[in-house]
Every structure is written in C-alpha cells, then in structure tokens.
Length: 189
Image 1: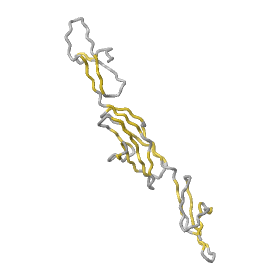
Image 2: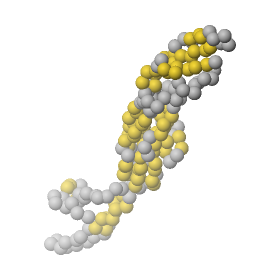
Image 3: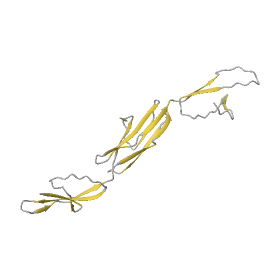
Image 4: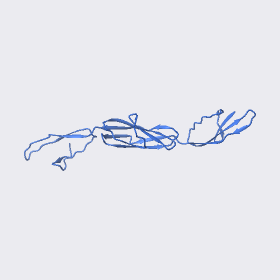
C-alpha cells in the first residue's frame, strides 16, 4: 500500500504508486512516499524537494499607440513569476513576427491601419502566458499642399494661401516660409 506525504503530512487520498501534485501557492515543499508491504513492513522513499514559483505573468507597454507610417515604436515587456530563463515571441495581428524573440520589439509599420500587438512568454519549465494586447493606430504618411500654386499680385495687395493636409496624426502645427525664410507669426493653416 502507498501513502504520499507533503511537508511531512500525509496527503488525503494519495494512496497510489504515483501522485499528481498541483500546488495552489508558491513556495518550497518536500515530498516523500511510504510503502507498506503485505506483512506490514514500511519503507520510506527518498525526499524530493519541490520549488514552486509564482504564476508567470507578462505586461507590455505602451498599450495604446497612435503613429504615422515609417515611424517606429519600441514595445517593452515586464515579466514576473515563473522560472527563468524566459523565451519570447511577439505577435502582430495574431501572427508570430519572424525574428521578434527578445524582451523588446521595435515595430516600424510600412502601411496605414489598425494593429494588435501581444507577446507570448515561455518559462524554463514550459509554462506559456500571453501578455495584454496593445492597440496601434497607424496613420498614412503626412503630406501637405498649398493653393494657389502660383499668383500674380501688385505691390500692396494681399494673397491668402491655404494648406490641405492628408495623412499624419492631428493636431498639426504650421509654419509658413517665404523664399526659404520663416515668416514670423505665420503659424495657421
């Protein structure tokens, strides 16, 4: 007959030749087995030491980003618990990013759109956990045109130039130039 022990106390119902240990808290434990033969002789096994680390968790930041095409954003991770060393795999819109296997990842989008970024971390004993999901809104590249594109006026007359912006991330700031020189105070659209 078999009786398993955890930290010196018999485990209720653990009376088979094997025992499945599922700890509910982190810490250090000792495990051993007493085996009793048919004539009542008891043999005690060796003592196994078990170290249970806290549950693996990971958080990535930033969690929300607004950026333009061809800009870059560094994502960083904070890992706690589990058993180090850790392995990392970054995901973009649900697909693993080839070569993105470190604690940080530099994202440089080449097209506008809405992206979801997360990280899977696996610890040294094979436990895997998923991070929070970061939302990334990528706007198209900024471009600006002004109108009119040419004008003929007489000295003393005024001409209003107007800008039209596409792409980029608002709000925008403006600076007008005349013959390559900054026009002081000309900072509206």
